[in-house]
Length: 90
Image (cartoon, rainbow, N blue to C red; front, side):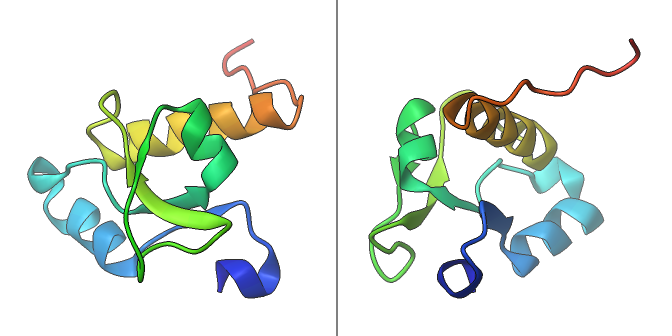
């Protein structure tokens, strides 16, 4: 689906369900992102069939929860796109 619609990334449905129902089991893994953004994060891409030439499921050493991993990925995506990340509470 990411390839078909050219999305910036996505979260595996099963991964989201685990985080939602059992957050203590959260590992931060389960996000599919653009390879060039994953490289910026020093992330480790999964092998095929969990990866394509443009996207991969990945993990990083820094983010160990789904919310933290999403924030990390969105920040790197914004930086790669020369966008200013949002500021909250200002």
